Amino acid sequence: MFETLKAQAPDKILSLMAQYKEDPRSTKIDLGVGVYKDASGLTPVMRAVKSAEHALWEAQDSKSYVGLTGDPAFSDAMVKLVLGDAVPRNTVAAAATPGGTGAVRQAFEMIRMANPKARVFVSDPTWPNHVSIVQYLGIEMVPYRYFDSETRSVSFDAMIADLKTATKNDVILLHGCCHNPTGANLTMDQWAEVIKVLQETGATPMVDIAYQGFGDGLDADAEATRAVAAAVPECLIAASCSKNFGVYRERTGILMVVAADTGAFALNQGTLAFLNRQNFSFPPDHGARVVTMILTDDALRADWQAELEDVRLGMLELRKQLAGELKRLSNSDRFDFLAEHRGMFSRLGTTPEMVEKLRVDHGIYMVGDSRMNIAGLNANTIPVLARAIIDAGI
Ligand code: PMP
Image 1 (cartoon, protein in one colour):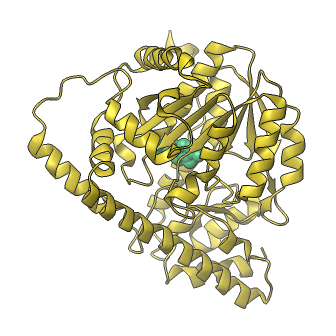
Image 2: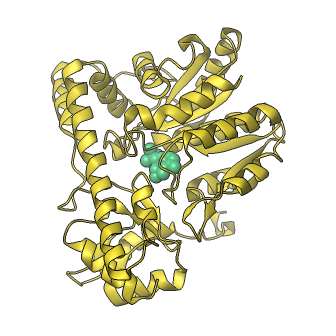
C-alpha cells in the first residue's frame, strides 16, 4: 500500500548539515542548523545539567510512567520561568511535550479541535516548521508581513496592518523573543501596539518562545510573553528548553494555555491530557526532570543562569565584532543591524544565489534565506565571513 506515498522533500537545514559534513575544506564555516556552539564549535552539556543528571542517576529509583501532562513540578517551574507573576497560576493549564516542536504541534491541534475554521496568522518569514505543521493539519494559514529586507528590521506598520485583518476566530502566532529566522524583534512599545490589535480584533495569541535567555536576559526575553498573557482572556504559549538548557535531544518542552478565569482551567487541562494521550501518551521525562531540578535548587539555578548569561553575552560579542568588521570593510553602517538583532540568528537579507556563492566559493554554509547562526562564528572566522560578504558584493 505504501507505494501510493509521495516522496517528501528532505528538510533543507538537515540537508545543508549533511553537505557541510562532506565538504573537505578545512576553512569551512557552519552557520546552518540552529544549535548553540561555543568558540571551539562544540554544543556542550551545561554544568548544571550534568550535576542534575548525576544527582538524578543516584536518586531515581523508578522509571515508571509519570502523568499524561508530565510532572506537575515541571509545569510549576516552567510557568514561573516563562510567565513569572503575570497571570494567576490557577488559570494556566500546562502539559509537558516532546520539545518545543511538540508544544507547537499540540497547540495547533487544540486550535483545530476548538474551531476547525480558525486561521493561523504567521509572520513572513517564520520558522519553517510552523508553516509545515499548520499545513499538515489542514489549518488555513495567513502570512503577515514582518521583515523589511532593506533595513533588516521589523516592518512594523505593515505587520500591524496585516494583523488588523484577523478576527476573533483567528490565532496570531508570535515569537516571544529572538525571532527565528530573522533576529529582528519588536520593542516593548511595539508589543503594546500588537496587544491593542489583539484586544480590538479578539484574535487569540499563540506565543512561541524557544530562546528565552538568548536575547536580552531571562526576564527581559519573557517580558513580551508576559504582557500578552496578562492583557488578553486566552493565550497559548509553546516553550522549548532545548536551547536555554542545552537539552536538545532530550525533547523537553511545554504547552501552556492561559484562560480568562479558573473555570476554564479544568477543561483546558483535560484537553491537553487528551491530546498528549492521542499523540504520544506520556511525554518524555528525563529532560523535564533535569530542568525542574535546576529551576528549584538555588545553587544549580544560579550556576545555570551564570552559564546561560555567558552564552548570551558571547553571542552578543560575536554580533558586535561581525558588525564592526563589516563596518570597517564596507566603510558604511549598512551592517549595523547585526548588532541590533537578538538571539542566535540574523537574516543577512541577500539572495539564495549569493548564499550559494558563499557556500561554493568560501565554504560558508547558511540557510538559503540567508539566515546565519551567529553562534557558529568565532574570533577567527568573523574576519573570513566579513571579507567573503564584501567580496561577494552583498
Ligand atoms: N520554535 C522555534 C521558533 C524554534 O526555532 C524551535 C527550535 N528550532 C522550536 C520552536 C522548537 O525546538 P525543539 O523542538 O527542539 O525544542
